[in-house]
Amino acid sequence: MFPVFRPESPQAQAIFDLFWLVMLISAGIFTVVAVLIIVALWRGRSRVELPTQEFGSARSEMYWMVGPAIVVVWIAAISANLILTVNAVPAIHSPHDASAEPEITVIGHQWWWEVRHHASGIVSANEIYIPVGKRIRVRLQSADVIHSFWVPQLARKMDAIPGRDNFIWLEANNPGGYQGLCSEFCGTQHAWMNFKVYALPPGEYAAWESARLAAPADPAGADATAGQRLFGSLSCVNCHAINGTGAVATIGPDLSHIASRKELAGGALENSPENLARWLADPQAIKPGCKMPNFRLTEPHVRQLVAYLETLE
Ligand code: CUA
Image 1 (cartoon, rainbow, N blue to C red):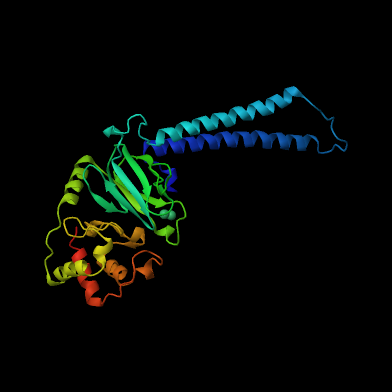
Image 2 (image 1 turned 180 degrees about the horizontal axis):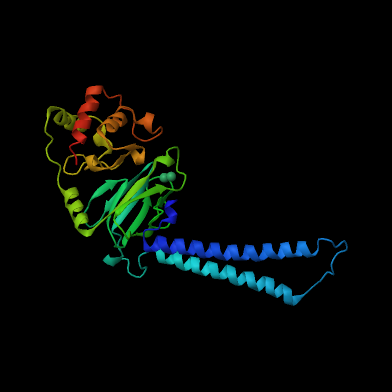
């Protein structure tokens, strides 16, 4: 069953309920119209002459203008009310009110998502961790073109637009991983701009937070140590950051704790040492057009970089 039909948050449930309500109203109208047409066809099946024509009946015209107008205005009103409930726009009158600040900012990039947790300072890519059962305000931005942030089981779609802040709430009723995707065509690799929202019970969330805040341990082993040196001397540091090291660039995904991620490259690959090596050896073969160039790394260099990155758990 499509994820939109398995809502896992109060908002997604409200969207789902509205969908069925509008569906039922439409089906009701369709049935009435279809039955009237069938009855008319049946009763007039053997008539040759035209039935008497009626012109200018103010009464009938009033019925078929006012009736549909009421239905349309009603559907518009309940839809607008739903939109206002699921957008998490901070109060306009209190721009400095801390409670109006978002907990998380998500920035769309071609073709990945940057995730910034404000209270803890944790930065990640393509995965958003939230505590279960809590409403999290998310600010959406874009670094380049228009993207659209969508987690079908949790919330509405919302565009991420350059130079503009949009806000939504993220919330999950139950622990689990919820698939998210970019739902606005944004270039060749739009299809590989996936992400996941992981909802954790409060205790596990706190454990996740402290694990992510821990500085990386010094890599052990010849390959990993060599890989760490390579990371600093090759072009990696020009684009990537790793928490607790000298790498602080923000052009590409933050690689702190990359070994604990479940996917690579916006969902294009499962995260495993083999796939990480494939990615480093030739990113363009896996995700043509992506911003990570093929550095023509030698096989030992790939092995050493993978050994180092795998220590970042
Ligand atoms: Cu980003 Cu489509």
